[in-house]
Image 1 (cartoon, rainbow, N blue to C red):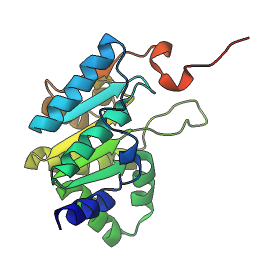
Image 2 (cartoon, one colour):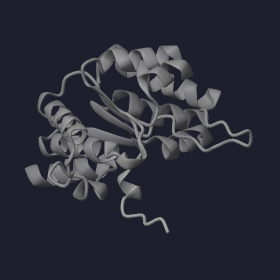
Image 3 (spheres, rainbow, N blue to C red):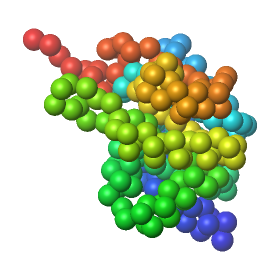
Length: 202
């Protein structure tokens, strides 16, 4: 029954497939900065205190480590929900008001929420890539509720803490405050994007 409940929680979390690939053991930490963020993720998984924020360089393993944290918590019997930002925010905006309110409530109240790629948006015609007012409003509804109720929240984003505050001071300020001491901002350097490793320039 314990295993069955765990499997059910994994299915409900939305992480059942990727959770097989993204474990702590499979994260290859060969450099100091990688060891630092891996240890930070493992510490958070063990203590589950406050919020966890991984930001910065794309392809540096932010999603891998955040998912590994969720896996650890799910196996410990915790209730976790995965929110792939770009997909879920698009679906939320397309919902009728009553359905949106119900879906939003699930994201607000789940004991542990993992928001992956917060404020990841496509590039507009003018070259900008900023979230819309609707994106900001929905993000505030989720973040503020969880801030007020002190609910565990894990966030990965390519935006730095300063950029989050610039986008919306109320949202950014709450995230930075709750993730104080558990914020890992990975400096953007081409060599830190594992997806580009092995590319041969001729």
